[in-house]
Every structure is written in structure tokens, then in C-alpha cells.
Amino acid sequence: MTAATPRLAIEQAGKRYGDVVALAPTSLEVAAGEFLTLLGPSGSGKTTLLSIVAGLVVPDQGRVRLDGRDLTHIAPHGRGLGMVFQHYALFPHLTVAENVAFGLQARRLQVTEVHERTQQALEMVRLGTLAGRLPRELSGGQQQRVALARALAYQPTLVLMDEPLGALDRHLREEMKSEIARLHRELGVTVLYVTHDQEEALTLSDRICLMREAQIEQLDAPERLYFAPRTRFAAEFLGESNLLEARWASGLLHLPALGVHVPGVAPPADPAPAPHALALLRPETIAMLPVGAAPAAAWRGTLQQRAFLGAWTRWAVRVGQVTLTVLQATRGTDPAAAALAPGSEVALFAPPEAFHLLAA
Figure 1: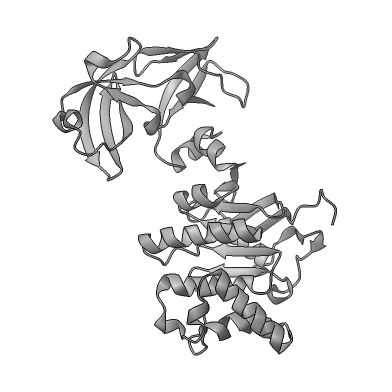
Figure 2 (figure 1 turned 30 degrees about the vertical axis):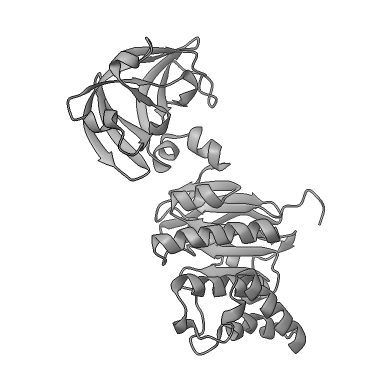
């Protein structure tokens, strides 16, 4: 393998079921050591793409290569991949150690090597003291750790994870996200991960492949996908968004619905600048201030609704002809915030760099 060869290369792989396109011809590369997430709504093609890589689905066209080796028509067990599923897929009658050792034994390794690798894998996921327990004696998070240990035990060059946290409650999901991030960081393993959960994708990924209608919508780093989406779908799918019809000319952004002009806004990057555009303004980039303390460039608005979300408070503020969503960090028992009620007048302000323009 040369330095330029990707760890995983998907070359125009596609799949149809009759008239239904499960995956349009798709090409994608994953670098060695990269954590790449396939993100999208149900039916977007992400699970089909992962299944083609795993060998669970045979593509109608295209190729799958691992370190340059063509895997397209090789059975799943011959691909040497680690796999972690949502529902663990543990053998209920085998102990934790026996579950982890199963794949190693299937590869006909020496007994001593199987034992050493099993112990190492269990220590990696911090389950070394539970080796003799049965799956039913473990929590959901512990069972998923066993599944991770089993996938990592034979040191695969690529690990596939299909909604691995989907069956866990919120607390366990947070715990396992940290665990997966730690293992990726420490082991440097290449991961192809599938989820519909935006927070998982943003937290774990080096890059996110956002999918829609059986094809790739945008492939980018999490920060760029969030703050610089290329399409309306990408802007609306990740996080909360305010999308406003806009006109841009010579650095001046006119927002007719708000009745304001914002100087110093960068033009749409792709395609070339156009007079008509959509302006994306993320709710957390908007400052909400008392009318008397606002800068001259602030916009006046009327508070319509307040929702307490814990760490964040969401406000709905009517400005001109539209209602903007504003997210602010909750500041405990802030008397100024507590005094605000529907009908209160407030001032909003966002700097020019907070606006991202999409071609309309």
C-alpha cells in the first residue's frame, strides 16, 4: 500500500431493489485512522452503503477496496472487518470472555494468543474483572463494551459501527460516546460509523458524510458542515437554523423580512455570488440584549415564547415579518431573563461573520 492509497475506497457502488434506488452510484474514500460517519434520515442510503462495505449486500455496480484489495465479492467473514451493531449480537450462553474469544478462535489462532488478545481487549474497554459473567448479568452499556472488545480483539484495519448507541438510554449513550472516542484516539483504528443522531456525528467524527435520498449531500468536517453547509437540506438537518431570504451585493446583505442591512458579509462560496440567496443564521450566534444596552446596529423584536432546555434557553422572537429562534446559555436565576415574558421588547444582534450564504 502506498502513502496515497486510502484505507477504504468505495468506487461508484450502487444498489437497486426493483424500482427503488437504495443507493445511487456512490464514491467515497476513508483515510487510515479516520473516523468517518454516515449521517442522514431513514432511507437516505447510509445503512445500504455500510452493508455493501460489510459484504452483507452485494452492489449492482461498483467496487469496494480495502488497502487496495478488492473486497466486492468476498464473503463478510473473509473481509477481516470488525463490526459493532445496535443490538450487540452477543451469544447469551457464552461468558464475556468467550464472546470476545469467539472470533479469534474462528481464525484458528493459538490458545495462548486467543487468551492474551481476549484479556487485552477486555482491559481496553475496562471489563477485565467481568470476564466470567454472562451477557444477561451486564447492563446495556457493558454489553456494548463487550461487542466493542470483540470487534477490536483481532486488530482489524477497519471497524464498522451501525447505530451502536441506538439501544442505550441518554446517560449510557454519553458514556459510550466517550468510550468510543477514547478507543479511536488510543488505537488509531479506522472507523466507518452509521447514525441518524446529529450529536453523535458531530462529537465523534473527523468527517461527516451527510446523505439524502440515496446519495451524498455533503462530505465535510463537522464544523464546516454545521457552520458552512452547501445546501438548504444540510443547513436544516444539522442543529437549529434560521434561514432568511436575502440579497447580497458588494458585501452588503439585505434581509427584506427583517427590514435590515448587514455590511461585511462574505458572498456565497459555491456557486459564484448571486444577488438572491438564503442567509443561514444559527440561533446560538444571535445575542439578545435589553433594548437600552443594545448597539445601534441591533434589531428590535418582540418576545413570543421562552422554552427552558436546561443548559440552554430557546427564545422565539418576532422581528419584522419573521420569527427568529435564539439560543442562549442559561444563566441560573438571572433576574433580567426571568422578567422577560411574551410581549417584551428586546434587541437582537449578530455579527457579519455569523451569516452564511447559500445560493437560493
